[in-house]
Length: 316
Image (cartoon, rainbow, N blue to C red; front, side):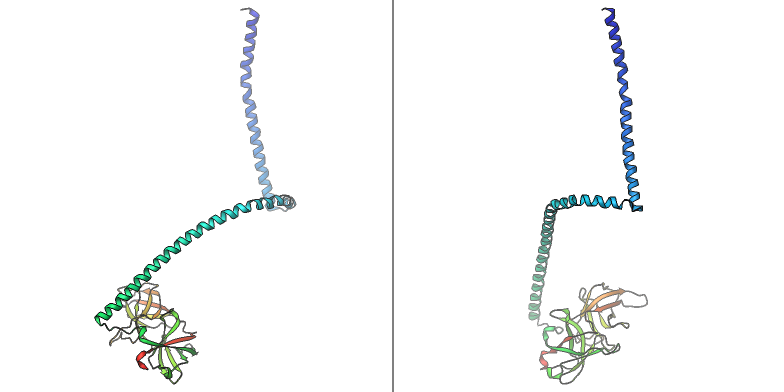
């Protein structure tokens, strides 16, 4: 090989070998510039945010920017509205279907309960007839006399009301009085008993009177039987007294008239099943043999508008 060609190849090789490492400083420089730019933008953003919160110097710029961007915001909202409405419609449709499914299940369960209860009532009536069973009087054993309340309690110590029906309508002392709107639609809630009667007017002794006492039971647990009487001072609270510590009463249980027959401390002239109130408090004390049970009555005794007097059908 000629000497000149060898020299040229050596020179070219050395130049190529030197050019290769020259790219690294350029890459490092570009990365460093990008980091500087990003850091400057972040710093500028923090400065602008700080100035925006602490000063009103940028209010004009912000207002102008908002004014310029407002048409774009409105246009974007109009474009996105159909999509939002569509999503909301589908979401509402799914929720409505789920709610409809739940309601159908509840209706089916209630229908099943009605059938079971109706069947039990029918069987109960058939068994009573077959056994010639004579139990406590029921609501169906009474004739109903509707009356308006002429006078509500006149003072804090007055526990009576005057009603617009009396002996002319078959009412006698001891007649049971209920409020049509206090309990269930068919039964009502217990108000008290008639203690004085004239021709077309009668006076009703309320359940809150100190002389009033009603043998009652827990609807959820018929084994719980006691006497409902006035509470410690408030007419909004009654006491279910003389209930043994077992079985225990639960807060929220409904208390009804027990309808117990016979003589003794639990004798009752009331038909079974008249709602009285709801248990709001239950506790036990080592110093007492009985549970401490408070009952909130269904009736607001301070503002009774009308009543129903239960008169035995054989009394007229």
